[in-house]
Length: 138
Picture 1 (spheres, rainbow, N blue to C red):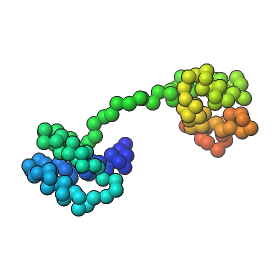
Picture 2 (picture 1 turned 180 degrees about the vertical axis):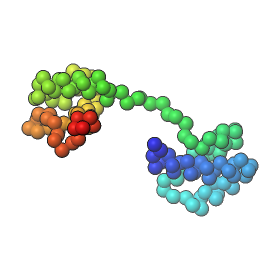
Picture 3 (picture 1 turned 90 degrees about the vertical axis):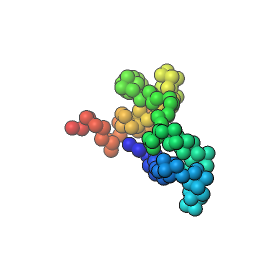
Picture 4 (picture 1 turned 180 degrees about the horizontal axis):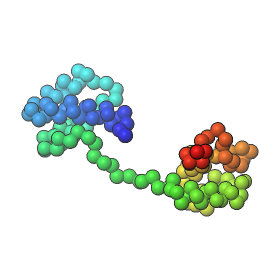
């Protein structure tokens, strides 16, 4: 699903693409864009990069995929391991889980609250009765 920023950039790229294809000078395109300038608009260098991309024949206005660290901590194995560790010791802390599993405390907290539907009561992780976990209450 595209975010609001993706949609915003898509519109700007489309606005730059057509005059570029029509061989209108970038200076003229940028001066027109200055008339509708807003706080969140792309920088001039970004607009120049997009125009160069369109001039080179790449007419794709969608963003290139970005490299980055994949989300890998919330796996079914980690969820099952945290659940079994919590069943063994109800007083286990997020820090203890973090040290034993070598994943971030944020990922552990997400697994406990979002994936397992737990909440912390008196420093113990217990199932949250108000959260409906898919497949558990069918």
